[in-house]
Length: 86
Image (cartoon, rainbow, N blue to C red; front, side):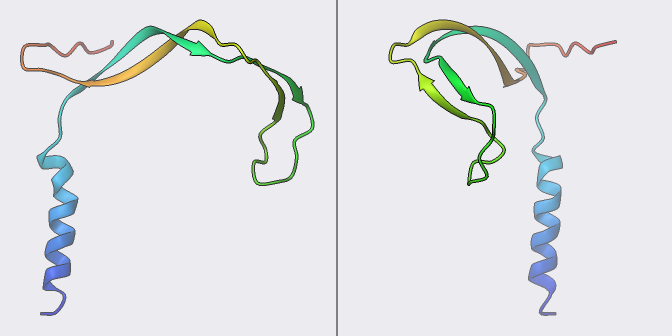
């Protein structure tokens, strides 16, 4: 009897994803963002906290506007149709 609250909690949390699931679509957009370019990468990674990432020694002080591709996950409203890929 002492395990009953634990079992009920596990059952409710495991079925909550099924009960409240929504349909979604993936939207790809191009957005313009202020970007600060970097250069002078160190080709030998350092064995520190940030390993295996390279270190960038040169950063630009001025930002440039650059076009980036953004992927967004959006819920489907009632009036929209779901288009399935073949």
